Length: 397
Image 1: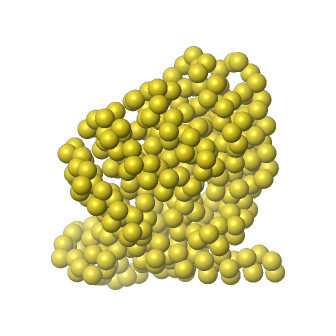
Image 2 (image 1 turned 90 degrees about the vertical axis):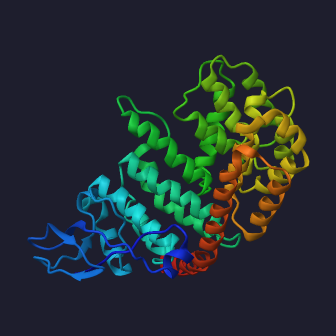
């Protein structure tokens, strides 16, 4: 086994260009799987690169047994794919979370293709741990939002539906007597991604039915699932649903329910309703402390980002008046959801001309995130498109 140490940098160019001068003494514990006698072996890595003999020859090797080491690990593709076959039984939940994070970190700097991450995800089809699933689901949403092209989205959605189908079958759509709070929260998250990223027709039909039933009821919301059902129903919702949600928001009795409805209103993707919601944010109907959050949330929507950005620029005097320093910084930070060099330049130019003193550092961080996202999309987007094309052929055989 050959181990090599290098300082990790989030910026792909710097990570691959700069030769790391740091040298650490790193306690590394390796875990092997799939062989008699395979287990945990610990070594001290003191050089840039060292070779170690392992006591057995397992099918795969995990570079951070127990997820106890304070380091990231990179892997060869063949090792990742072999681990994926044994992921749910061979690794602890903490190790699974760590491995998902490590592989994604390698994807970000171009050391591994995004398809390695998808291979790991396929190894978690029967996962029951909410923290593990939450880690994976967030990344699946990110991939759909930033790495898939318009031509690839339907194939990626089909893959997500297939991936999450076992979880939906296990969890169902409605709470069960005696089930854990973990399963309630996991159900909500799985349905959110299956319906939003996967565009699952059955999930979307459930969300519309649940929303109609809830809006006809004057009782308190079930906030473990209301966010999910409302946002999915709103995704393709019309002005009638928008109006019903506005009216229900006016009648709420708790702050929790108020913000559930606010989040639902921020989830519509119809351009006319997005414009309506943006204008409403600056009206007396929305409290000034919530207006900036509305604009920021819409800016994070794939369908709303450009509309919210143009709205914010054209209404900057009004926005700046109600937002103040702290909230103005929130809008600067919201631009970090953009993902192109063109948008980066627009953000730089606008906030150079319209300074937000409390957000000078936040502006640089947003520009860095936009740059890193655009770089990731350029290097991993084509790999994802090819994988989706090949994967579709294999599934059909």
